[in-house]
Length: 316
Image (cartoon, rainbow, N blue to C red; front, side, top):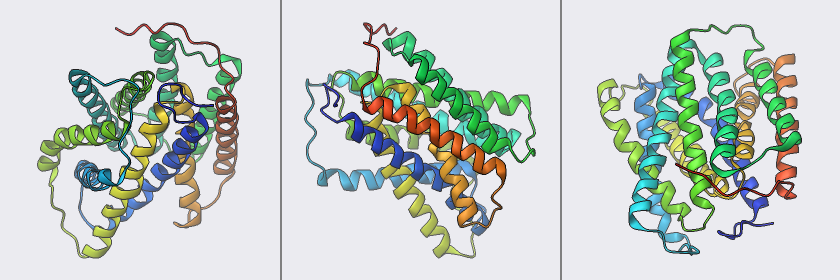
């Protein structure tokens, strides 16, 4: 089964999203090594992540086959798409880092990643007529329950209202980015590679003044480790992962995208146990199993084309 407009098979789009979600989950472990090796702050790391990722995407673009779109995309729409997607990406990343600082990693992760599928499912229903169906709702509820067990299972969470509001803002940025990618991917006019590059250019410009205020150049006694980790973050969970994400999100239903991307905390938890020496708890194992089951069920339904015919889109 393939998207009629873009020609990318839905199954391949799902595979792209799975790889992107797993890659995103490795960013936290790499970032923790960056923080240990230097005094780099989260906004500066986000800036370098986007700036270096942009350079890598630009370097790789001539190697890609020229994209063939179903219809030419107007220049004004291309600029609007770049600005809106880049702004959504900037809000998503920056508000999440701020939420972690304000209310802790556990609550920020649960609120951001938990609110995302809900906002996206609602937005997709209102703007594109996409319906989850009974099995889809069950999968979303199961995935969110697994997320809560996985992240909050330690019982060390501290809830602060300001941090929760920041996490909701992060979820809103992620939701807008996902919905717009799906919306503009429906007619095949959007160049996915161009979307990724332009979004990163806008995000880099938005983050630059905040990174300058925080401190752009870090102090470190381990420059090789720091450089290697920043390069990895820019290459794998940024340039590669976001390129795959934008491609997959343009052909897969928005709510399905949001649930598949919950593989990020699963990947992070597996890395924490396997590489960072954290203890495997019942909450980690149970939450991971519940989330993987929900993601697998929804992905299989999507790949088989089990969906209700879409209504005419209504986007204001």
